[in-house]
Image 1: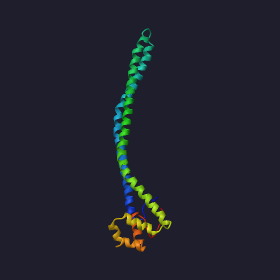
Image 2 (image 1 turned 45 degrees about the vertical axis):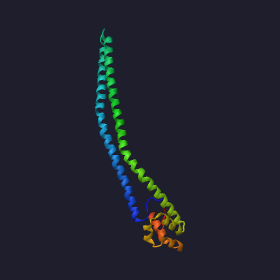
Image 3 (image 1 turned 180 degrees about the vertical axis):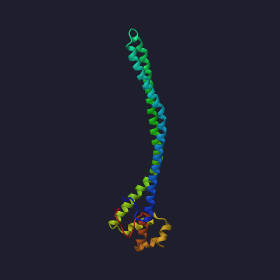
Image 4 (image 1 turned 135 degrees about the vertical axis):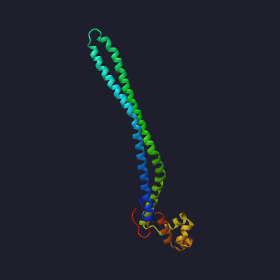
Length: 202
């Protein structure tokens, strides 16, 4: 497989395309991270609720211990304080749950916002890029193995438009019959981003 064309024009377009894909990816990753951070701020109230519940439960538990040491009525007064401590723990758990929900929401919103446009572009760009790489790589190997120019000339006649063919020869069919394959083969190789005159490995 070849990563980039040998001809300057197509290679420049490929580099610009690849850089464009990288820039697009970076922009949407940044957008996803920004959204994630913004939504994460919604977890602040939950953190405060958790802290308040924990503090309340701790304070009530401490009072419960002190009340328990009172003579006669200490044991009876411990139960209400125990229930109050449970309320504090419930409040703390609710705050923790709210933070987890917000965290998951922020994470998935960020991933979706970043992934959808990136995947959409890659699904369009990557198959074409891979198809060119395989085709150009195969052509480059054939060229290096000394493949007859007739093969590339025939491909040019089959694949290129009449306008392109007449730019390199006024009589493409006549050139094929006469065994003059150079111009047509060069057209096909250049269309693949390869140089006919100075083959290089792929």
